[in-house]
Amino acid sequence: MTWFPRSRLAALTVSAGLLLAGCGGAAAEEPAEGHDHGAVAQVEGPEDRYAGLDLPDPYQRPSFTLTGPDGQPYDFSAVTAGTPTLLFFGFTNCPDVCPTTMADVAVALRGVDPALAEQVQVVFVTTDPAFDTPEVLTEYLGRFDADLPTRFVGLTGTQEQIDQAQLATGVPVAEDSGRLHSSLLLLYGADDLAHVAFDAGNTSRDIAGDLGLVAGA
Image (cartoon, rainbow, N blue to C red; front, side):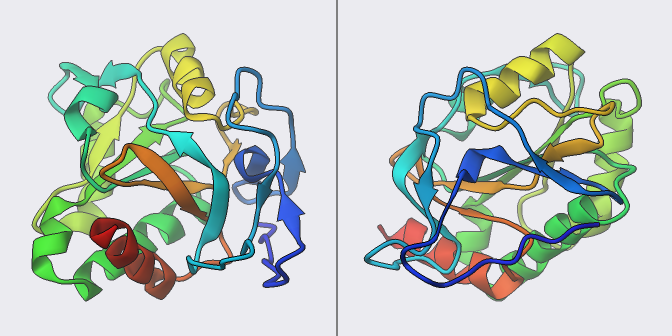
């Protein structure tokens, strides 16, 4: 696995929506077709408000419908609107990035005020729908959220639906049967915008701190 080190220099920029993490492999950058949030986002911008990746050009909460844990349609925008929401694309057989990210989220939620933890929605969208059924996703996410007040939600669908969900979110479509996927964990606030995102250079403490900032905004 190739990690993405994060400089704290205000002048450093990255293509925030374009980070691809090869689970168990290398990293790459690809253009994100349909991404209308602006290609370049500044990391640790002039105000340096967040511990995560500051997004001066915020990402709009995306609109897509996939299959939820109960096998029924799950309208992401409608269900999560106006609530703090963490969104991540990955797959259950990922050996490193995905379980590390979900574990960091779980630790972060255990460290914040219980009232805040109860508000936060965590949504994991598979990039490997051929394997990740609703049952598989529920079992996988249950390894991380069993003691939390709000359970993580795993979404699947057809390959076309998942590709469209990634494009609507502003991350590149996963490649190599879903194994090469975005490493970004996006945090949306009550304004339905993501002003901050996290990658492998961030910690559970970063996530917890920024959840407090976003919830209090």
